[in-house]
Length: 462
Image: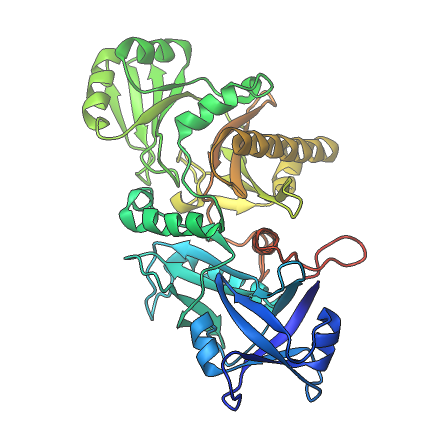
């Protein structure tokens, strides 16, 4: 039996910490009465208590003592929250409690840096749906789980319970190999906590995984690990343009574009704001230099795609964001066209790219019917990619950003898959709560066992 909103509050006048003072309406709803002995659960802390029924509350309410609040790590004096009674287990459970983990430490001035707006959106939408949400910075593991809750328009630090579900927004691949991170994920595993997007994705592993599905191979650029000279030289022979990318890179950093020309090979760098290149007369000299420079990290070599341009010399690609719904099915939540700055080779927003609605851009290049067809096809392709990646990888993935390109011949290509898609920019201008925020909270609530309420048309109430 399930109620979407009760009021949990702390009352210092209660005589005993093993008592729950419960409104009569709530007792009737759960078929409980004074003197009943039940298990009371908040997060993963369970205590045995006795019911004290009271007629004085006008709304469904549970009161607990300050001692019990401290034991349960209930952080507030009063809070609206969901309440679930599992009759077969005789357990009264409050929730959901959900958290987002980050390696970004909180600072009074900068808050959580570039992720602040997104975290505040998550917090506001969760609060609107009576969900306890907090951000947990992982810098030195602590068993008592201190975290930050957004209250009264500011972040406040509290001692908080082990959550029912966790969303991973760790922004460092190195940090995901640290003891702190491994200790925390072990805690979640020990407690049986649902935890999604547990790691960054490796570009080569993603390419290998998708290549194993015949239906995906037509959409994949030819890709190899950067390794021996013979294989590298063969790619230079086959294609006029190739890209060398870090297998564990993000935001368009450290990408090299290599073009064949009459003088040999020109290498362009994504790190520079201007079109700066280095010239090599032979493929062997180029390979030798790259091998010296790239020996500390894994890189891939990828076929260059001649992308369609928006305006003159501004290539574009498309980021399609897919998130699982309450049935565990992948759905397109949003999509954006990303337009490269002039004379730059990457379209990432972090590298100065411009973001627009895909249909707005495509209707400037094609007729409206074809533009809509491309938007639909990109969405279908992204959902298929997300489904195949989640099937072929260990762990739970709930959010993936799929980068799709459209070449000058009208062919779609899968460029990249990201498990930590950027959250810096809103999906729609002037929109306070973006669709991805709503979808992530809905999925976390589902994983917690407290699905968001739906209206009669089958859509989540917002």
